[in-house]
Amino acid sequence: MKTTFLMRRLASSLVYPVALAYVLAVIALFPSIGLLSHELAQMPFMQVHPRFSGGEVVETIRADGVEWRVHRPVFDGLLWERGHGFVQIDALCETPPPNGAEIAPDCAGDGSPDFRLVLPAAAGDAPELVPLSPLVTGLESWAETDGGWIARVGLDRK
Image 1: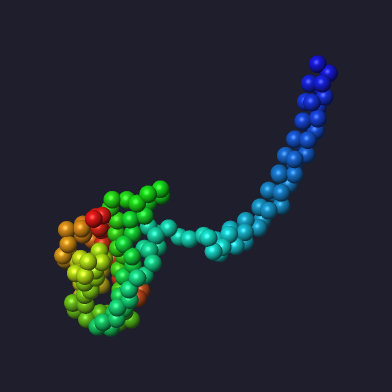
Image 2: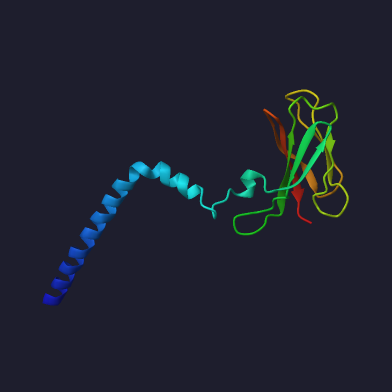
C-alpha cells in the first residue's frame, strides 16, 4: 500500500511539471505562429496537391499571340488514383486573343489530339470544347484571369 502511494506521488510530481512546460511552450510560441507556418510551408517536402495547382506544366506552346501551358493529367487522390481526373490548360495572352485561337493537345500520349479547346471571342463567354477522344468528359471548369483563361477538361482513365 505504501509503495502504490509513493508511485502515485512520484508520477504526479513528474507529470505536472511536464504539463506546465508544454503549456508555457505553447504560450511562448503562439505569437510566432504566422512566421513558423510560413517557414514550414517553404520547406522542400511541402507541396500543393495537384488537384489544387493543376499539376506540373508538361508542354508550353506559343501560337497566335497566346501562350498555352498544358499541365499533366491529374488523377491523384488521397490514397490512390481516381477513375476521373482532369487536365488543366492555361492560356496566357496580353491582348484579347484573335477569334478562334485554339489548341489540340495530346493528353493520352498516343500521338493524336484528345480534344480541341477554342478561346472565346468575347470576355465572359465560355471556351468551346470539342472532344476528339471518348476519354474526354467535358469542360469541368474555367475562369477568366487578368492575363488569359484557365480551363479544366475532364478525363476518364483508360
